Length: 458
Image (cartoon, rainbow, N blue to C red; front, side):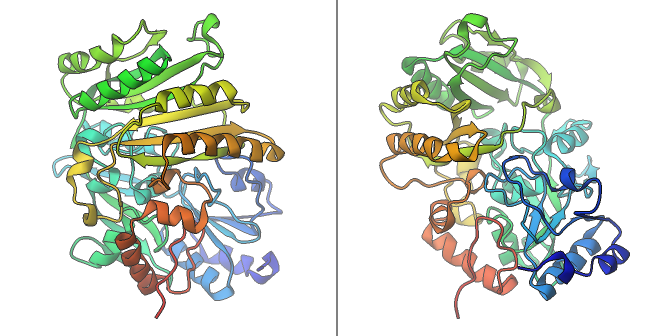
């Protein structure tokens, strides 16, 4: 493995517009930290790039020295891909500018900007791009994976509003890509993750999204209620997207004390349209039970990304499934597993899909499963490494109960699942095309800290 002695740090510092942080610097421990704090890697250097020329310089250095390269946008990778032991971390967080063209309804965003900050900047003009549901996720990471968030049924995946990109490839060259220029690379970037280069800027189409009906609705969980909620979300107008977390109620101030530890449905929802129509669309879900808390109201869309986030977890066991139906007995299986869970926080998250996402042809982007009706995210968060096998067994058991076959998956929520994860994320024809693009733009697999697509063989 390359060590810090092999990397010309002093030359690197002199050449960059950004900042280099090494193990001797006082801010090193903060700089190496990623969202899942259990990943305690010690990079030889963290480069906080200032611009695309810095990115090119770091990519060239990693290629020339054989140093492992980790690229970090927001650092939320479930597999810890935003850091490296002994390698270089290319941190894009300082590249966070957003340029909005309200008349043309487009925006250029550097890929280190966080989802919440991007949404605030575009929201000043009553415009938005559908991202995820977490404000601190990096725009680069969520976009390259596909992007399933609050606007998925109304406006599709994040990648469906990507018009172009600027990307530094493995040879250090900065390319401008779109449907007409390097169309194969443009196709692969939209769903293929960080396999093909370091995307430094993205050009987005902006949708008119200003006031919405949105927020969190907390309901007591039962098998019947969960099943009916899924049915109501599927039957709702496409303007309504629902993200329902089924979990044992944490001891939070807005949750009645007598409900703590009991199963609840914490549903985050956004109706992207007229307030009166939004209230009508949400009414069937509200009517399923007397809410334990009801924070759904007319708000401006950027407010969905406001408020404090909970403490970052150390580790997470689990995976996600893209399914065509909420199987008979699925609700009962979730509640049964929650009753037996031993992790401090365990949940099954249901995201009803369809709508605009499903109307894009399967082959139009590298996102492979447009026809999926729902994403189920199974997660158990825990602290100690030695607890991992217990919680992985719990998550695996629930996944098996929810899907008899090897299920398709969303690349953005996969952990370290190796080749099986790659094959779950991409249908055979999509994967074959991705391997060809990988061979053209990264034949030596420099960009391998990701859900890795190997280059095609000669």
